[in-house]
View 1: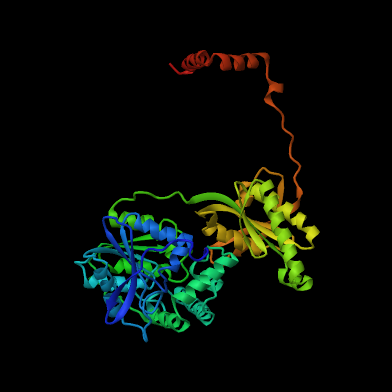
View 2: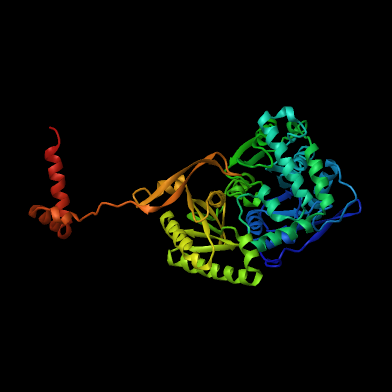
Amino acid sequence: MGKLGLVQPPRTQYAERDGISIAYQVVGDGPVDLLMSPGFVSHLDLQWTEPAMARFLERLASFARLIIYDKPGTGLSDPIPQLPTLEERVADSEAVLDAAGSEQAALLGISEGGPTAVLLAAMRPERIVSLVLYGTFACTPYAAPDEYPPEVVERSEAIRREMGEILDHWGDAAMAMQLFAPSLTLTDSQKRGWGTFLRAAASPRMARALVETVLRLDVRDVLPSVGTPTLVLHAEGDRVIPAEAARRMAEDIPCARLHMLAGIDHNAWVVDGLADEVEGFVTGTVHRSEPNRVLASVLFTDIVGSTTRAAELGDRAWREVLERHDALVDRTVLEHGGRVVKHIGDGALSAFDGPAMAMRCAEALRDGVAELGIELRGGVHTGECEAIGEDLGGLAVHIGARVSALAEPSEIVVSSTVKELVVGSDMQFSDRGEHELKGVPGSWHIYALGEERTSQLELDAAAGYMRRSDRVAVTLARRMPRAMRFAGKLAAGRASPA
């Protein structure tokens, strides 16, 4: 997360329901109202300080009059002594629509907000003109294990235990974002910012109550009553809510269409193309899709045994080492045609146009830090990244980080994609076998870059082998191209069968 207060949030207003104040904001002036039913926790003001989240909201507001709110008990809305029922959540949504002056609206239900959105669409078909559901469910594998394959139930149990750890350490952003947005690589300042967001969005007790309630929700019987045109969206690799939940919902809602999105993230604002799908469904057209995808070779480097080394040197000496390390990284990456995306604690993420450049830079860095008394490890992967301002995100960045973590001290490892892209170079590789990368679908073949280089055949120019007639033809082609094309056509005509 960026520095707090970086983006000026819209004016916060309040709707009233049964003596409870519900904070909401209205952004944009598009031809259709779009109410977003929020997921787990939210904070209307702080979400505008995160560039990627703010960009997602602005994208929605570019084609709609976007209405967003904090559920009672979260964010800027009033605290509540106990969680409301699902019907009361629906009443909260209607109170916000009334306060915003919206008679009819499209509805976007995200994660935990999905069941609320489903019930609202079924109860108020005259008011909800279209329904979009992302990363949500009618019931969880915990509530209805018989509805899901055994392997899905088993994975969900593991996620539930992981969620328990997050609740036990509420405000630990690294732990939370690893589950909800694993493709993101956070700097220390971003971790602090997200920690602030979580603590401001909900108390630990409220967060735990929300999770326990979500696990028990079940709106399966409501799905056949949803007559509103519905689009069900889901990230294929979402670990929080299994893709099977989306398929079940799409099957049971009469007017629903399912569309799976590439990615591993549960948080909606991280998923590439989601806003485009919402716009296309809600308005019938996509007015603009910002080109935010870029093919890049990402290099992750980090200092081996940094904690031990810091303890040996002491705080002051270690800070000096880190400063010299960061300066070396900045200089070396620039010399090799790349750019440092960000420094991450005792490491860095850098981006290059090609994998060979990234690997040569990694070698130079590995050799260059010897004078600092430290060792580096590095990992390189090439793939489509999401450009988030000056930052990079997406699955390719996540894979690069996971690949780097497999490297031994002073070793540079690469994905099979990188190895295949540098075929024909002088680089040699050692096979490190197949690996499952946490949070990444499938298995990946990993290779280590070797020290030795392959001797390459020295090539020469064609001119040394050309006959005199060849040189004449080349000269004529350069000086009289039309005549040569005409002669070529005549020759082709003579060669054609009668």
